[in-house]
Each structure stands twice: as structure tokens, then as C-alpha cells.
Image (cartoon, rainbow over the protein chains, first blue to last red):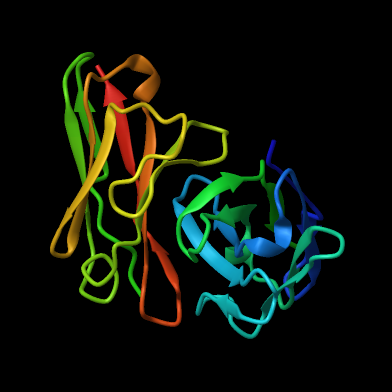
Length: 120
Length: 111
């Protein structure tokens, strides 16, 4: 059974940093691209970042480019998102999502999400 | 890059069929067969319902179907059931540096 378990969310002041983690199990982690998708309170879904199965290729939304960094540790089946220079508008539930085989887009499994709140 | 355009809300009665549209551009919906649809119930994570325009993942009811014409993709739900009431989001691969773009979401109400 595929499982994705996010952690690392919390309350942080504007300008602060957080590192989110997503522990994956139930599939060959290194064979699939992974993404982070966020959802601000009462708002829609927004794709944030993606990383290839091997970790060599990464992509970020323009809204987080230069502030967020996606990475993965295939030896520990874990996906990461480093969040720096946080702003109030980064407040959201952050989901990790597994891509459909051979795809970047199309996410067949999602975690339960971890809440990031940016406030003073 | 702006989100894909979806109607804010649609409604239908049990047993009826409804269609949700998702309009983009030739750089996303129209340029690739990588449109997906997600169902999200309140307080829950999204669930993949359709990928690659019209493919259903294992376990998804065949009452859900997807299609695309030009820059507009559509999700059709037939035989509406109360449990279908949820928010629905489309997404597409895009040629921009954004890689993946979502629609703004559509709230489906089963009357």
C-alpha cells in the first residue's frame, strides 16, 4: 500500500525558514517523480515544486523560485522541501504527491498534508 | 501564469449527468495530453479521478470520464450520486517554467 506521510509544518515568522519532509513507502520511490502541491485556506490547489526520480532535475513555481528548494533522499525514501524567506502568502497546507509513472503531471497518491502558517 | 479556467460551481440532481470544463491555452491543455482531474472532499487530500485526458485509475468509478477538444478539457460525471458532492480540480502539464498548472476548482452540488 502506497503511503506518503508529511511532517515539519508549523508556525513561523515572516522571513523565517522550515523544512518539510515526506516519508514514502509501498512503492519503488526512486522510480517516480514527486511534487509538492499547496492549498491556502479556503483556496484552490497550487503546484509548488517537482523533482525527478533520480533527483537530478528540479522545477519550482515562479511564486517560490529562489526561496524554496525541493530535494529527495532515495536511500531513505524521503522527499524534502526547504522553505526560506517565508511570506504570509505561503500559509497553506502542503501536500506531497507521487506522479503517475512516466509523468511529471498527474498525481496518483497524496499525503494527508502538513500545515505551514506564516505569521508574526 | 494564470490558472486554468473552471466554472466556480455546477449542480445536478441524483442520477443526472454533469460536465465541468477546464479551459487553458495551446501551451498547456491544448498542447499536451496530460490533463488530470482531482476530487477533493472537505478536509481531505485530493484524489486522482482522471489522468492523460481520459484514463481512469484503478478503483475509480466508470461514471467518471474525461475528454478534450482544443484548449478545453472536460470531466463528465454520469449517474450523479450524493457522494460525488465535492470540489473538482483540473491540472495540466505546461510548457512554461511552471511545469504544472491547476484550475481554480469547481464546487459540485448534488441537489
